[in-house]
Picture 1 (cartoon, rainbow, N blue to C red):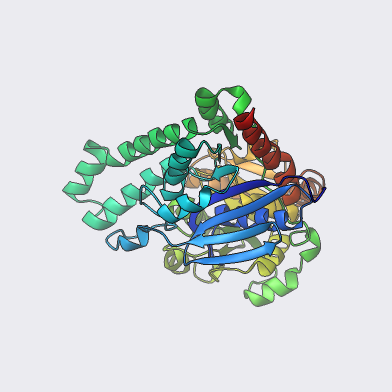
Picture 2 (cartoon, rainbow, N blue to C red):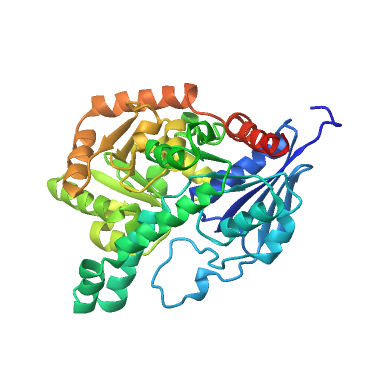
Length: 422
């Protein structure tokens, strides 16, 4: 670009802590920031995260900022488990002051302090607001409210039954969150979506012309079939050479449906299927995995990206039983690595990849997952076919992070800015 060309100043707001074990939502925006640092676009890009105050400069026109939360969920010690901490304050004064310098603000949720602050700044200063859908927060709110009630008051107690079955507090929390999301989307000029259901939702608020698709990128240098080293993986995780190795990547909790995989694996191992599970992630289900699957599971906790790339390329399949996914970075990275994927049909993730045969949808429930993994494990032809298709799909059909930044995001940011000034 011409150095004299005016750069579009964009702030992306991710109201989550940034740490090495963070999930796909955080990793997505870290990688977009890195792409911006190498980009020739007329863009001045800052990604904001919640956390201890810090500025990381990635390039002349790309940086990451961390701002301390005003009221973090980490302060709520009575909650048994929170997947990721966020800021519950209705307004973040420090962020508001910084947002005044930008041409466009981009939110990645509609519920917490960063998003609510951006709404107020947009109303006051007229700065365009764009949003994108990353986490299916309303269903997560329902799942974890139910889990919190059961753990706090006992799963079989009278009070738990009253709150869950009679008062339907988890369902009411989900409805409340959906209403809040509607309000936030209504404050935006454009929305970027992945799933069809989010498209319908956003179009009902903004209209068809203001809703656009957002892809996930893949780092094909890091994640590719050439990283395959099955012997190293078997030695490192003490896996006999005749095992079918199935990966699970993500938080080890009820929200990711890990217990469905545990139950399916138990049944298959009891049948004599030579199955070994490797998990990459942390969470409260880690002990249950070890207790219930014994020597047939490896639970290393957080797996660094380079090791994760080797795992994807060396495993036989990736299992994604979560039913409340908006997208799946694990699914993208697996296919980029040539790894077949079994994915929840209810999540709709397979549709995002044009129902490629590399990604097989599985119906809900442990029985369906038992059947699907059994079919995969006992069919060498199926395994080879899915792996071949995954290699081809990863090579020819996955976008890079540079593609996502320039083709999906930048044009919408520029459009939002031009609408303000026209």
